[in-house]
Image (cartoon, rainbow, N blue to C red; front, side):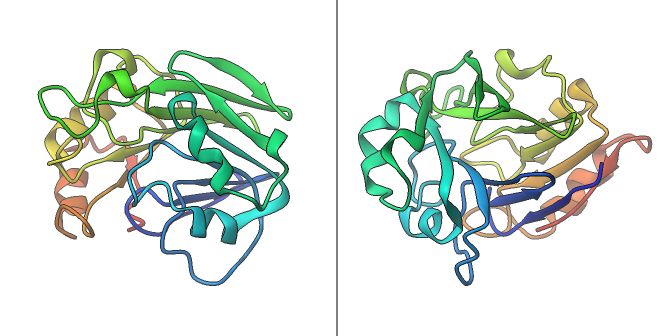
Length: 210
């Protein structure tokens, strides 16, 4: 897996392989403009930041968003309008030679991320590896059997799974690498990552990048 992975804050993720992918860029320092693709999971301020998208995306890059956010794509003027692509839960498509699968991301019994909004997690295949970014979600039925090599799972609780629920999902998915996200900033404690790691089996590689 010859890639560089960084988690900036919350769900702000950068994956660099043959292409550079960003997910929910937020609080980005500088203006790298190196993003071939920028994926947005939903419209909350700490996930959809037009300022930060503009900082990272290339002039010919692609912006991928939930179909329910189509009216917000015009806020990104740094790319051609035909490079703003919307997808729906359950959709699988190739976007400029990158295979993208969209999965639901929502809460059960909590009002923060509602299923009918059509917000997303993504599985993206880059250089033959499958990267799953959950987005803000609970451990919902639709995601329990996803095949992935690397999983980015929120653990902070309140708005998403907590560490115990996230560990249960990680053990169901059993990726080669699991990376916890969405803790230690807006919600959750910096020590949540250590607690989450301690719940996993020893044969599961966990990387704490926040």
